[in-house]
Length: 121
Image (cartoon, rainbow, N blue to C red; front, side, top):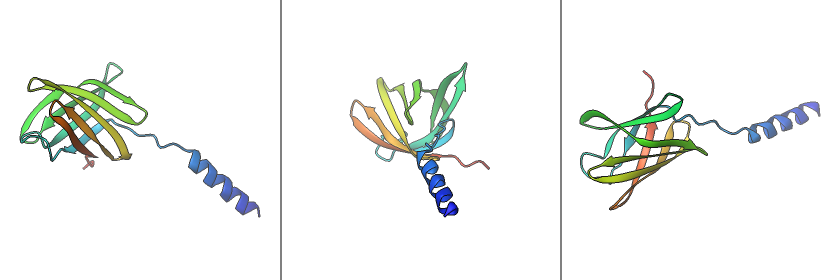
């Protein structure tokens, strides 16, 4: 009987434990419906001066472009980038510890995004 009670309490505690998502790291992204040259690359999230920062680089171009207004609240990562004369708003949510999905909102519409955390070698 005692074992059943302990097992029940353990499962209740596990259900109340919230997963702590960590956005910092290097993420590989895919945006298959984006214009050519913007369909894949990496987003690197870090910190500087106690603020969240991020850069983006596109496959075939190693230039790292800083992302603006980087925020992580309620397991959602949001930021923006000014590119080709327009501000693009990016909104992502965690699907699991190593995967995020979301969208980039452009003047031409929404583009789905999928990000996978780069595995450490």
